[in-house]
Image 1 (cartoon, rainbow, N blue to C red):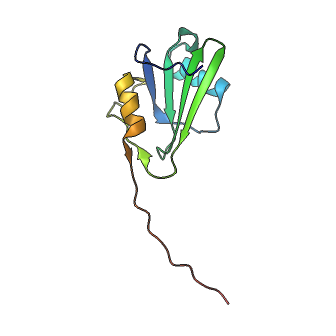
Image 2: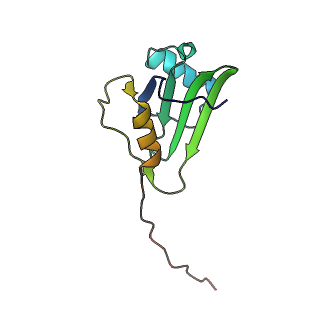
Length: 116
């Protein structure tokens, strides 16, 4: 259970992903678009268009696992990469930076209008 560490290989999918996707459809992206094999034990990172939701797909001992992180405020800060590539290899340190270095967006408070 929870088996992510610095000895694994991590791949970031450069396109925005519909976060309704789950095990089979994310595995399909890994196989058909990223040209990798989920069964090889590598870790695959997907983010949505707004960079507010991240899913990490990984094969562990008992089967496929998805780690899902949704930010309440801010967005993930991704490393620079060529968007024409089908995948971008990142290190464990890069992943930890992406998850911990969230760009906070300032929220504007709006006055509530009282209707009568």
